Image (cartoon, rainbow, N blue to C red; front, side, top):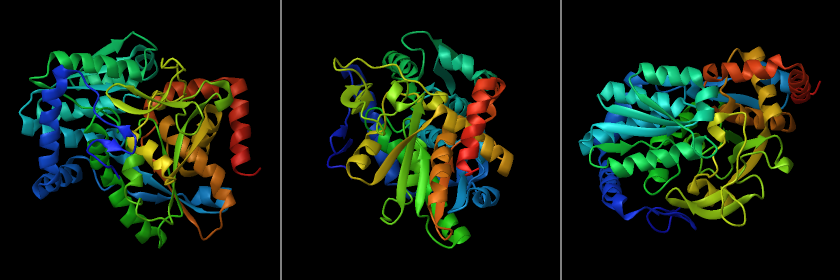
Length: 411
């Protein structure tokens, strides 16, 4: 896939200040040694099985399959992973690397808060000091996760610069790391950033796809025809897609935040729109939402974890290769998907994951009954209770949501 270390086509790389070079060299070396050491992966798998409840199941959404018609719908239940999302897969792996490096402190950025909770959990288990950077906007809309991070012993720093969201939290985390390299590891939460983070995070998240491939064949009797995952930075998508990349008959669909609509400019679709521009920021090269002068644009999504300005360089390359199709789901479509899943299957999805559900619900009725689709439910919706309650409490919004939900079902 990549012609030289850290690159995926024209994307990726390691654009870092000289002060961080030795730290990155150390991380690359430890990561490469771990990849070549079967005992490391065995230790990781044992940890995830005994501490994080893996493997997570694949659930047949029988009620929705009947309601929507068309393809059989299956859901990979990362919401049942420890801490309520796929994030634990990555941070537990990085925690094992931190132990190998002998460092005693971890820092992280978070948008939706799930990565922050997972990192704080890992730090508590391994005995690390922990600081989490989070945009002030996200602190306000993800208060339940902030509460648990603090209870787990982490220091949560509210970032008030810029748009006060994920990209600004990443900037602050890098500043911290540059000043505390000797004893601190930056536990990046998604498949972005300088090499080796995109590849390393994808490797730890590949546990999702490895499990799902075996499970769906056993449960559905075949490989899925289409696989759906939401895309913010790209870690849960890379995790699920990795299990099917070699199966050309399996169509991979990444779903970005369409926000208020691509035509409005209020969205976070780097790959599904024409607004993504090649650029270098935060240590790597990829498609960013930026203007002609290279200044980063404001993003919008009802889901805090999807309003990042960049995207995984691996996914950008997979789009260029035609291996992954990218779509965007609007805020209203996402809320309608939440309502459908909750009412028909008794499963409460995160708003991020509901982008993938929304696109799958659109496409399921267009497929035949012998076809199978698999959706990655990357997290549960407890953290979104206030955002969801506000949306359903607004009568105008509720009307739009219910109309969209009926539209999915063809009513």
